Length: 374
Image (cartoon, rainbow, N blue to C red; front, side, top):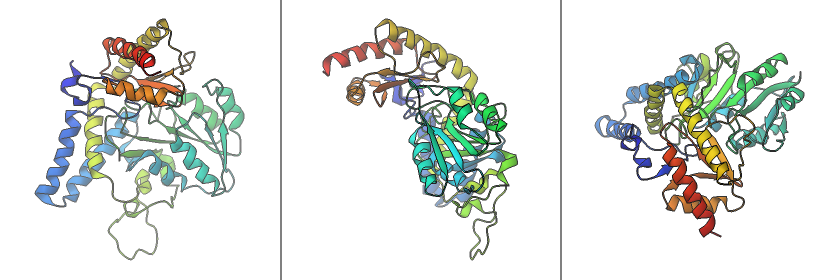
């Protein structure tokens, strides 16, 4: 299929920035227009808006293998994480384990949790890798949860989520997964992988826009937790004035906060509908083929990998560029190759629309960029 007909963002370009912002589709553009028209036509059609918000939430649940009532909408992965953490107190188990390969969504938020009395242990990567034995040593009987990535935003490393859940549960700890850098391109099944909590948003491989995030909470845990970072939509009757006690909604929706970015939820639903139409398993097979072709071609041309190629990767491959990585990103963008720099690496994120021609064009332009920007 000629995907550029459906995705204006990739027309005339080589698009490898889905790890940062997924390309804009006609579907999402039309969804945004529908939101605009709903205001022009009806003013404040809250029933219509709420239907679309929860349609997006249900689509996200379907993609990760969750029940609909186990997922709630948020503004971002960060807001979802903050609401979740507010349900825990630093009594008994107070240790939270994370890594230096995790996105600041986890790192910064968990540092804030230190101010509330939690002990936060940050595992240090070795040559861009966190080994399973590091988790086995760090997760103990004092651990509340392990909070870590499915796919690292820094170098594309993909972790074995089921192995991590087994480590956590053997010690009575929870597993929280940040799936933002994989969901939509990499399969995840929260039931088979025995995930307790999961956060993500739709800006990247789920093809949405900023302002839409989601929180998954395993159903047998949700009603036992009482978050304090809440607002009117976390209550059974959100429109009740003069409230004198909390009356949480059932399931994960007790973790909702205030009014959502409704336009972002319209966009999120449209983007995720494309992912569901294609199927994540099918997408992943294509992504793996294109990613492997990219790696083999890059190595044959002498590029240095920043991703740990000896380990399993997600959809993203990072090449080591050094302190010029951001400048090279800008040069490539000016020449219609869209990438994303993080640290010394330049990231190439593969999705269902990427082709072998994209690989050849991108790496040819990268060689020119390195030559002409010295």
